[in-house]
Image (cartoon, rainbow, N blue to C red; front, top):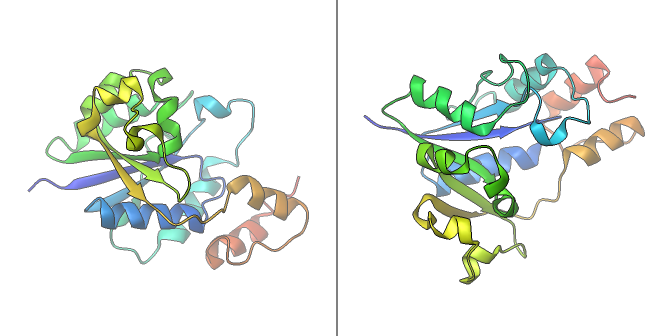
Length: 202
C-alpha cells in the first residue's frame, strides 16, 4: 500500500519547537503517513558557516522526535560527502521507496528561489511540495499572480498554513553564546543535550 512520506530537510542546528510544529502541521494537513527529518551534511547555501557536527544534530533530532510514531530521521545526507542537494536526496528515497509518494516540505518563501535549485524540474517530478505559509507571509502563487516557473507545475505545490511561531536556530545559538535561556524554544531533552555537550558556546 502506497504511503505519503514527508521529506523535511534542513541543517537543524539545533532542531527546535518551530521545526516540530511545521512537521506536525504538514503531517496533519498534508495527510502524511510519515515525516522524515533529513539533517544536511553541508547545505549549499550555508557553505560559509560551519555547522555543529552531524552526530550532534542527529542526536538532538532523535531526542526531539522521541515518542512520535510518525516521525523518523534519515542520515542519507550526513552519510555522503560534499554539499547536500535536494534532488540527489529525493533520488535516493525514490530508489528506496519506489511505491511511496514523496512529499517535500519547504517554506513558501523558498519558492521564489526554487528555479535556481539544482534540477528543479526533476525535483517536482520526484515529489509533491508542501509549502509552509506563515500568517502575513502569503506568496505570489496564492494571490493569483503566480511565479512563472511554479505556475507550470501548480498541481505539484500545496500550501500549508502554520502558526507564526517566530523561533529561529540563529537566535537560539546566539542565546546560548550569551548565556541566555532557551527554555521552551527547544524540547527539554535538546536543551539538556546542548548544555551537556557544550554546543554553541563559541
